[in-house]
Length: 318
Image (cartoon, rainbow, N blue to C red; front, side):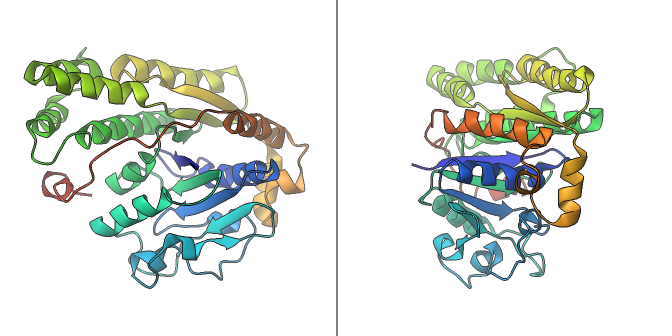
């Protein structure tokens, strides 16, 4: 079974795609077959961060029904064990993902034969992006040490938990109605726990439903990485994200590690060559190796069992 790791961020410009490219190289160099998928629909540039010219069919070929299988889009890079499914910035409409196409892509991603599958998601918390993030209980929230970035990361996590719980119950179920209504009346700073109070409301309806929701939250283990760290205060912003997420949502984020501010990263972008290749001795590369080793030694949990159906299109617009 492949280890699917979606990588998302609450806002753009935090270095997520650069991280995905370099992490993929690190995992491949450790002997793990690694597939990178550019799911930044409408704004893909993962190939650029890898130093690869995009001459291959990408994910839009599946979206536009030019290809039927995601496996047919995987191509081998010049790096041993590293494979890529690119995006398509020149193909209009890629960002407008039809619902049933999303279902097809999600199903086929889980069938990819690899040790690791890294999903470079678009920035923000649209439901298309969040549904891809929920492919695995171990997604990575990527942020930077700025208040706006941390707040957007928090919003992303909150949206993901709502979406996960909503999709945990059957279409047209009273549980979905309870969850939807709860989200619409929940106010930040009201002193109510997002997950705790919602579970109580579900339990009041059905003990089994409340237990099922509590178990989903318990199984949800997103990681957080703070990029461009320069001092202790930068790291503390990431720890603050952990605190408010635990207090308000009931989710325990694992701090996967900080990544330092490193001029070599910017130079690698200019040179169109990943920093772990051009300068493996850089502080960024060394810290990324620590993170990669954590992932290689980690336990793989199965994909969450969530409903994905066209009722999602009725009350909640993607």
